[in-house]
Length: 316
Image (cartoon, rainbow, N blue to C red; front, side, top):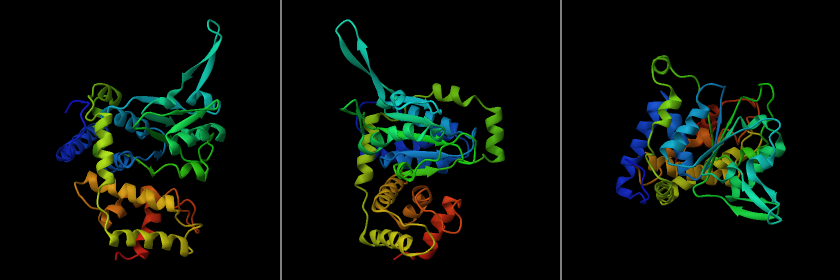
């Protein structure tokens, strides 16, 4: 399928999604679950945080998604001396007409890779907050809209590594999902060693979808049916997170909306017209893992956090 300016017809949704996943699996070996979660996040209009050790494919995944989804792409390497203007842009004085001309920064692309975001200072990290929440930025008193669709994919190294600044809770909450890639299995790693360079593969790829078709997928996800019983299950999960003594604090209403958006997108990704409890459970680690803190073990895994909820809250 080549890139087109036409909106995606619902009848072609399943084929388009399968093509995206198949092409993605050609590059990111043995990580289909992570690829599906990343696509789910983007279809749900969310921003994605990938946390893992250096060298496991975080940056490659972001490049891949931009390429196969036909999105304009900018990579920003976050360092301790990076300034907000390096991301947002700056006005430069023009002597010829005695005026200031605005030079937009990389934030004005459809997909921004904030690479190693936790190596920048909190001031620079916060430059992304308005963009992620409002799809706009205010620079020198003027508000400028960002393109649609607009995504931030941020990567970060584990907080115990030297030279990192932990993301504050307010910024963590702006990411709809946080995922990990982990090490590949032996078969995938052997294929990686013997195969073509991943960057060369991505450069040679054609777009599978256009931005307009991605917007169509987002609209289709919003229309996925959610039953009253499923909403009741979500409410019970949130109530347990708030009332139990397992977590430092419970899930906020925004977290509940994030769970619902992600579950709808996951259902669409798997060809279903309504959200099932297993859809919600599948995306739960990615959505709540960075929002809930275990009282007994602050460094617990997202899977364990989600399991505490699932095991203690029965499906209606």
